[in-house]
Amino acid sequence: MSRAGTIAVALFVLLGSARAEQAEAPPREPYQLVRTLHALQDEIARGNLDAHNAQPALLKRLGEEFQKADPLVWKDPRNSRAVVTFLLSGGSPQVVDALRSRGLLTIDGAILDGAVAYVEGRADDAKARLGSIQARDLPPTIAAEVALVQSALVAQTDSKAAIERLDEARLLMPGTLVEEAALRREIFVAGQVDDFDKFEALAQKYFRRFRHSIYAGNFRQRLALAVARFSFAQASDRFPRLVALLDQLDGAGQRGLYLLIARTALVRGKVEMADLAAERVLGLTEEGSTERERARFYRAAARVVTSAHEEALLDLQKIEVGRLPERDAELLRSALVVGRNVRKALPSAPAQQDQPGEAQTSMRPRIDFSRSLAAVNRAQVLLDESKEQLKERAR
Image 1 (spheres, rainbow, N blue to C red):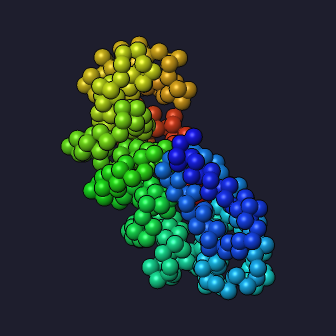
Image 2: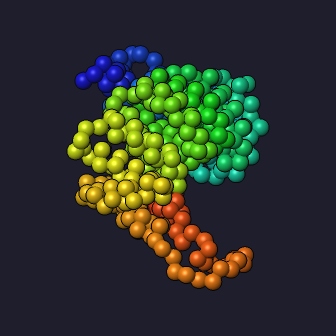
Image 3: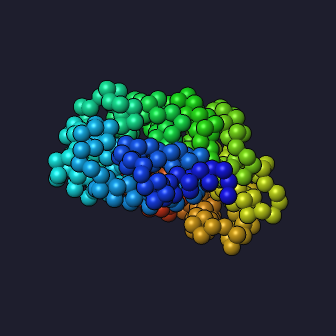
């Protein structure tokens, strides 16, 4: 087992065996137990799968220890703050409710109520409770957690405020899973406001500090969405900066991300970006590989609505559908339909001006390639994004 794996398992076993081996040692207080949780989470940020798998059991054990703790320990505010960290890390709300019903917790009720509302999915209640809290006025550990929640509550309505809260969370707990989560979220918000400079800086920081994180796959998804969704995809002069950014990854990492960018861009109708990303994959793959076949498909599908239409259509017809992922097989069928019809001669018809709201006539293009592809995949894209948001809330 790796050194990181050994550390993670040792941290977990420590809780279960320390008292049996050291019966005379004083019980560890809740805030000390939460330090163990933080250490385990830091291992997760470093990519330790053992730590990730151990966390649910550790949280369960913490809940049991909290409920057995001497009532006097809760007079220490550090222990009550530890309960909030426990809750926002995935701990049981029932444990928190039990402690609160006994009148044991000494913490600002707005913070506790807001945290409970957030994990229960009551966003409006959570925002009402936590919206006016100044995270920087709180002790660093709980401050970073609160700032992270505040950012999630305003991400859809106030991107600037979300970025400010995420910056706070990163600065308050550098090198931790909190910073890792804040970076992942902020890269997406930076894309929403089309701040490419911030997007680039955050991505560089993530690759430098957390490229091995258990959640790095989630980050790559967000990176691809940010690249393909917004106006960056229309500014091809920025592509060399993206290449320089991704050069920090190994070959497999680059191929995977360029493929994700190419497909996402294609589905969203950003054909120039899809073409550029697919070309990068072709330069990074060997002839005959599945990745190369996918790149050839994305490039041809992007070019089928350009001046290279005929050659692209021939390339599409040569793609081996059996070598594509299932969701790409449907995309290929749609691309072929578009390719065969987009330049088809239109029947003659009297020239006339379309009236507002009328269907397309021979005076208009018959098929909009980007809309055709997007229509086929819109449901899948929205489902994928919803899943990512649910995962973020569960974090």
